[in-house]
Image 1 (cartoon, rainbow, N blue to C red):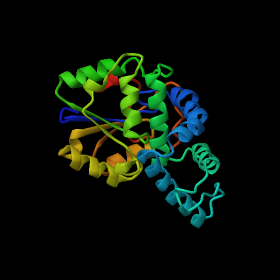
Image 2: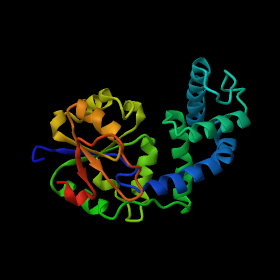
Image 3: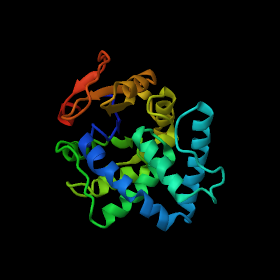
Image 4: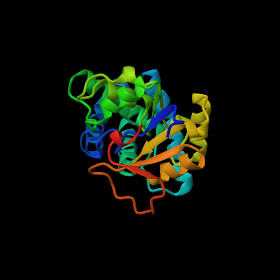
Length: 243
């Protein structure tokens, strides 16, 4: 691990309890999806996300998924149908980029109103500061949007930690279970793969990162789902066990 110059972190189950994501963030986004869209549907960013949703919905139809159907034109897609499809995507726990974009915007409103305050494991702030002092770059890679990632670290119970984080990646770089995504991140960071340590609670993600040459570390936290696949990666229970 002496060759590590950059740390790449998953969020859910790694820096942040899964319960916070599934029992607070997701229900908040679901509850506020309709009023948010009703107020902001005409905005450029929301219209862009809606167009992406229509393309995703059309692909669902081609693949035979039993999902709510949307009109092909963003201007005539009804609010009821959009909300129904977004709720369906959430029920599938699909890592849909337009869904994550809209969730991030809804959470932004909640954070700024003081309704939301993000939870992180207590060893995380100290580890971020330690790595920062060591001169290592710290980046986040999550299926949540970059906006959602920034908000989580800006409005944490431990305070604003964004000054310790150098960059963020979401599914626009590619799926977290695809080795090519990690190769793109390696290129973006201008580092050799072995210089990057990736921490996640998901073996499928760690396998993809390892295939790309990254140092993959399984993070086992309270409340995490058990990983059935045989573990071939280094295992930690706290960031204190890393660099």
